[in-house]
Image 1 (cartoon, rainbow, N blue to C red):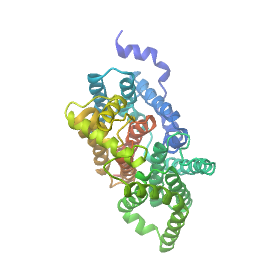
Image 2 (image 1 turned 180 degrees about the vertical axis):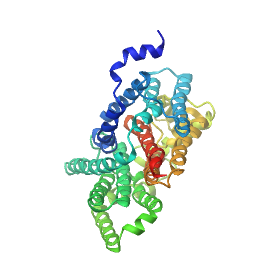
Image 3 (image 1 turned 30 degrees about the vertical axis):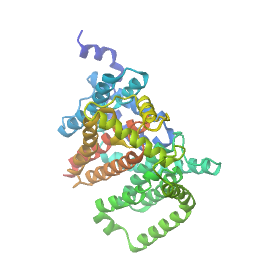
Image 4 (image 1 turned 45 degrees about the vertical axis):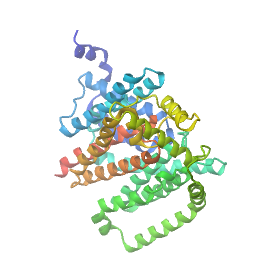
Length: 419
């Protein structure tokens, strides 16, 4: 019995008609965009389940993969991310941590299957619920963050349990709400504005200083992409109200921001050649230095995926004190240590390729929407990866893959009827 014949017999129950998937998608897929920040690791299983369903439908013959060349180029690039971790990881170690890192990248193989399932629904039916989900997700996340903050938690974590991923996910919602605010009017714009304010508060309460510049960068990016729409639709009164809202948000955020900035400035002012590993900034510098030494020792072959052991051994050598983290607090340095220059080049390709694909279709309504959302995604992830984690956390990695695929659907499928 051939593999295809076996799949047809065993997976017959996955043969759900495309029309049913088309009706389900507008209810289910926007949930990923809005609820990732709330559900945490549970979203990993949701997206993985979607990938498995799409794979099963493909194997059973119920769904055909796309013929669009850009998606296959993107699929190849993202599949290489898994292959890179597999090869460079096992070449250096077969430890449990290495296998754990490899397993976390399996989701990067799912791009063509996800795209096939998502593309069954036209973007015009996905855009409104996606914008609504982003706004509602931000509002609910803010209520959770505010509750935790008022009960003494120093930095908001939501249900993710980590301020880093929480800050990144809410920065994404902030950008998505910005796009929804720019392209809509009436009640939809009001809902987007409410979500925008809530997401702003979440990012501040996360205490993640490294992503705070995104609160300024993302509005500038969205204004550039939607410049003509904003000039036509937003009146002087609306602009004035927006300025007042920004001032009010800045005043309300001042206590949290000032505390975090004051700590940073104090650490900078007392920084010297003898690092104090009990302080946050000194720890970060020590981690970067250890990563730099590891990368310089093996720029082509990398050092493998067992970062805890690598960092602990290098820290002991450099500082006479062992410490370890799961990453090197910079995405490019981290992958450089793991897989050398090859990893750095591949990470750049994973960021640039989706932007190019969506930018080429920005002349249509949904093409521009997809490009704007993809820009928000990449800017947010790069800010997170500049001083922290980009793809290593289970939620961040698989949400990245899903989101890249999702926004490509808007760009590539949305211009079909608009052309």
